[in-house]
Length: 390
Image (tube, rainbow, N blue to C red; front, side, top):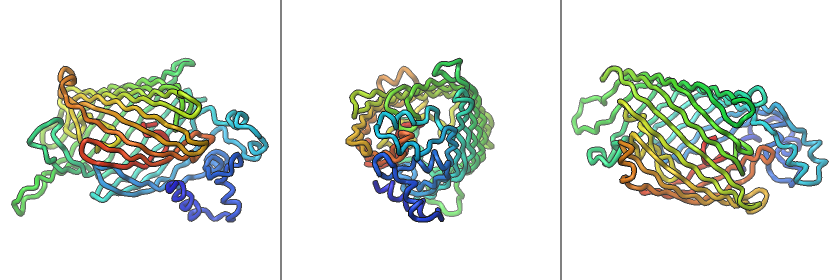
């Protein structure tokens, strides 16, 4: 609820319309509750969203995003207000995912910051999907050795700063739920290591690196909506060839394959079960910062890395009423430098609980907070939409 209040206050601050009409735009005529559907779909408005960062790998932080929803089938609340049943209102939900553009800026307590823009496009009646972004980050992270290395048990601090570009274009295969298309990733970073030497006058170790990654991505998507699904499957696999050039070790090549599946079942009217399975597999001369890592709530990003990673997580969402939900989740992951060693690797468990508020009913989009515990510590996360990537 606190996130919804912050969002509402932010919108009040930036909007100059009359107060009464302004509040009406964020009141759902169906239940008279706070809701952003009208602003997003009817007004096609720019939505300022405050960002609260709670990722343990970079520390607490904050930022802001300006989102613009390009809804091609906007709805009229005047017509919707005349409907008297939930069934009638459900028919008015958008059948296609909206295109979304955004600008974002953020910073955290450990000095990490980033600024950039992105666009997700759904074109030709969702027969073509585009995802692209340009970001300039300066990220302070810690490398732990890609396993149980005693050399890096306390971690090696480093910074990556420069340009990052992502371009992805997927085409629907005939009238199926399958998509296929090319993917490109480019970055140009300056990398700086803090060697923590007790010797004055020695500068941190720094070098420049450039990387080009080109590959193909296949996806399957049968979810009932892209924000907080109740049923369906989202699965994708990408395989990319990467070429890295830096001024210390020269050129290196490596392959990276990433596969994931998110499956949702509506077990009962008020209970949704989700299961996520993720695998990251690499070969060749992989840079330390590009190694796959266990991605679970409660475990800091890049804390457990290896050439091969497997992780799975289960989440249950209980809709207490039409607006509020409780979630319970838990998962486990493993890392290893070879596939044959995965079966003998240590399990890294994490889990927790949280709550959700239905902030945009016509889009089926929830927002809320998760609290999770991993092998080392507690963490909490602000969620908009599914905790698993859209």
